[in-house]
Amino acid sequence: MRVLFTWAASAGWTTAPGNWLVIEHDWRPGDRVDVSLPMTLALKPTPDDPAVQAATYGPVVLSGGYGALAAMPMPRLSTGSLALTSQQPLTFQARAGEATVALIPLARMHHQHYNVYWRT
Image 1 (cartoon, one colour):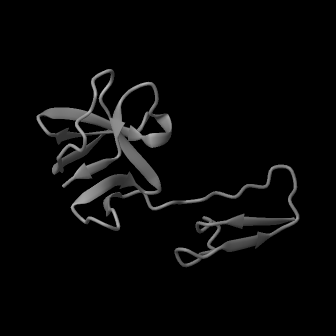
Image 2 (cartoon, one colour):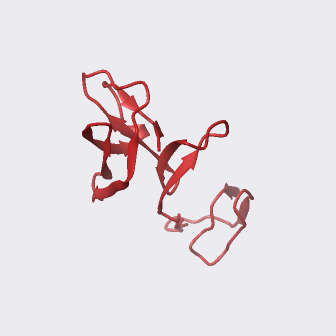
């Protein structure tokens, strides 16, 4: 069996970012592959405007929820205020415009207005 991973496995195998790591193994019940991802907070600029950025935590894109209130077209995020508030569930908060906003993984955001890109 051939399994492809885009990240380095914790078994000691590594690969350069953007490359594939191939693990060839005869899998048996109880076999495990643990994957470790670098989980650091970062701001990723858009290709066309470096002043517009998305907040990420490792490979996780964070989104700021505004509930039933319509979000501003593109709020200004105070990047210095961005802080982790909970690991379980993963939650950050920051000042955006005149409000404090909770940022959660985009995959968990639903049924409300939200922003992914921010003026910085």
